[in-house]
Image (cartoon, rainbow, N blue to C red; front, side, top):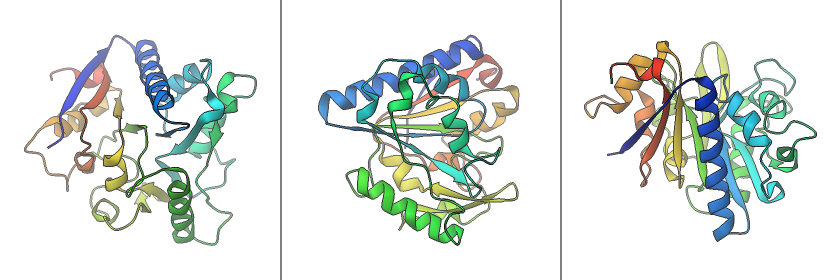
Amino acid sequence: MASYRIERARDPQDLALRASEYIATAIQLALDQRDRAQIALSGGTTPSPAYQLLGQQHLPWNRVDVFLGDERWVSADDASSNARMLRSTLLQPGEPGAAACFHPVPTVELPSAEASAEAFAELIAKHCSGEPPIFDMMVLGLGDDGHTASLFPGTEAPDVRDRWTTIGRGKGLERITLTAPVLSASRTVMFLVSGVNKQEALRRLLDPAESAQRTPAKLVQPEAEIIVLTDEAASEGL
């Protein structure tokens, strides 16, 4: 059973600052112990300001491997591409974070989403030790339907246990996503949850009696305590 530590930010700016500091600390801790650090980041609008701040920090970015927890099967210049979002925030040219080693999910340059999932699995296995591969920091979002990464309720992706990646299908798009065993293997896991529309999903995530079938974010079960960094709008009533 996962345990959660709730931290409430005052406002979106405070949320972004705290998130960037958590990620930076995880990177520094990993590099104190190993030659390289591996982090996996979520897409979406909530973490973008945090990545912008993170990219301005003077870290040994050339020793950091950056991955995405999931990606839409679209071209890298598509407006919905998580890789595009990272390139304009964390990896913005001229900022320290641009020196990070970004490993985007292969998408439409391959013939199918299935081929992309296989290629992404090979990519993370090459750079991350362990079976399942271990990330030093896993940043996750929480959908209002209870999904995280691209593990959507009512689809096959949450049940995949024998592969490190799979295809997630949600909101009309095919997506490539890390599977629950990889999400759970991370040394540090942090959920970023913002907005009044996330209140019910957050309540379900924290409810020990809640079904992972209805709320796939419950499938994330690391050994360490999960950090839930939330704003007041999402956490009201907890």
